Image 1: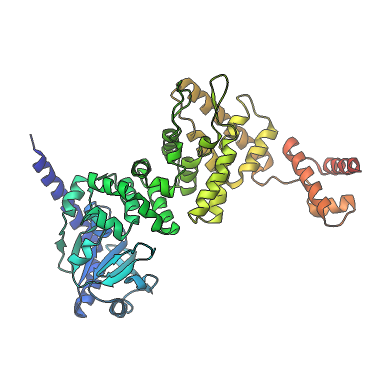
Image 2 (image 1 turned 90 degrees about the horizontal axis):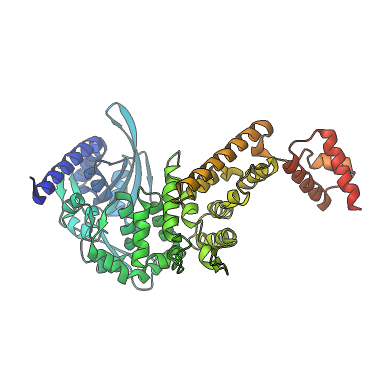
Length: 488
């Protein structure tokens, strides 16, 4: 029976074979660029996430390189070679480029970043790193976030460089820092969130010492800009195992600083245990929403699923009959969602969409269990608008009951709703519900000029359309005149 050392050795061999295969695939680009650096008297190495992903057999076409050349020298080498070059990150020693190259029988597009050896650290008051350039690759690797990202392959000779044991950590699926985690997180506090993100993306465990440092230094994250925090949170949420990363944020106290509404969901149970654990429920809803995705990860749906119940702590009431209620938590939650997402600098469009989903997530239950009227279906579709598909997924995901009979009944009810929507959409073009008379026709029928009265008439006709469905022109005109006469 093989022992642990033999298992590790076997895994390392498999990792190395995968890496060779991946590196051979990108050699036409990587080796060509490396030779140009070599001819100019500089060194070039594939580094960081690119090496990690090559070892995992998942290297894409985004390639990261490091070099002893200074940014101005990198530009001189890269500009004649690349199809496009950008200098957005040059203040931090990074030059970006795009290059098309033939790989096998196909032409592929590669996104490339070349960064000068560097070390960077935050002072206690600044949100921006102080960049200084180094002269050795070991010096560059020690400043990287985790050992699995602190490996390099020198090119074109393909020399593997791993001074901090990243290969063994990769095989063991563990996240450690090259130096002490305290020094690493002091240099860049965002690395604490990256630990959670990589745990979620790679399904790795975080070393106990790293977790301890994250817990002790959680407050340091507040020095990092909201935009950088948001970007890491997005990557975590879009990962394969977001529950794992979110759990780590809550466990270490980081969530209390970046997304405090999440740990607040861990409501203490009432003595009769008559309401479910809202925190665990929310994570389950997130996972169930992910299972319903059709065209890849959907950030709007995932955020809405995670935050849909954040209004519950503020609206919880213990009723006289012993029940626990959360009246209007969807309305309160929508406002809280907007406030948190605004603080994290999300786009106005995303804030609007996620908040709307949170606000609407209970609408299905509000219509009861009986057959819906056509009017109710029309209003549901109208209120959801272009979010209807996501609202379907969120509402279905929100069922986490262990009562199989109740779950089946809810599923059948929602199946029925979707069928009714499909039937009415076919009959009435529900996706573009509008009154039977437009603004110009309203003015003509009533003999009025543009103004507030036209808007009021339009709203009346829209409500009539939602309630009764499409009307013939003559009926709509008669109804409008009757409404107008009743106003006097």
